[in-house]
Length: 327
Image (cartoon, rainbow, N blue to C red; front, side, top):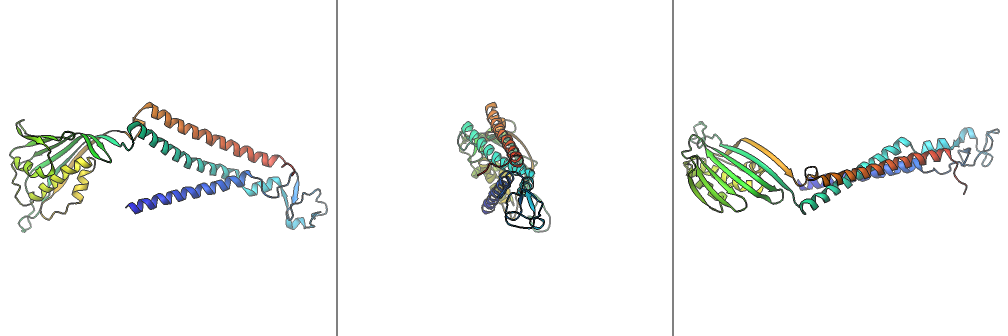
């Protein structure tokens, strides 16, 4: 995947450089006087000598038959060398590429100075629910679950894309028909304090440093037989899910379940909800100053683009209408 991403970036950069190169060539041909451009009237198509008369049908300098060699004028030579429309299109391509680069670099600089180098913090609230899969425990073709229970894992806090959960809480709720004691685990991300409370508010356990290895204890406290068929693997998955939500609250269920290969038992995602808050890398949700700077970059590039258009049109008009100064 890394090689594919790098190849894609390389191809995009190469395509951008080629587009800029072709655009520069198109503009150059459209605004620069072609070689042999006559200063005033017409010129011989063979040697470029400026003609005074066409009465004899031959160039007075090289004797070429003008019907065969042709007669060049300023207008026709400029038109043949390059197109004004192509030059405008080329200038537009150049400015689109350069504006994209300046805009991207500018926003990255603003974001890093506003939130700190490398800060990519997202405020989110997300809940993922899981139920055991049906499987053939006895080998007789009947498919049942290890137990009728459901686990809901909620993360509510701040998450850094590079580091993981930074602040907030992780809540694990265990309920279902086979659960004798519905309970809730609350875990503080910063202090690592945790509490386990029953559905009626009774405190069942508390302490510091809850980890995924304690998942078996949690399900046992809910009244489930963790030694039963399938539940041992589901307990391991629940522990992985708890560790995963601390690393990546936005995608932990996908990362854990896709990398699991159960033979008996297993958990499936049975529902989800999410609310994504402010992102420090998004300048449009941070401050009016960042909006002002971003708008200034676009305004500056727009003025440069407009100035370039005026220069191209004026340069070409003068090249067609005004004779070139004598050497």
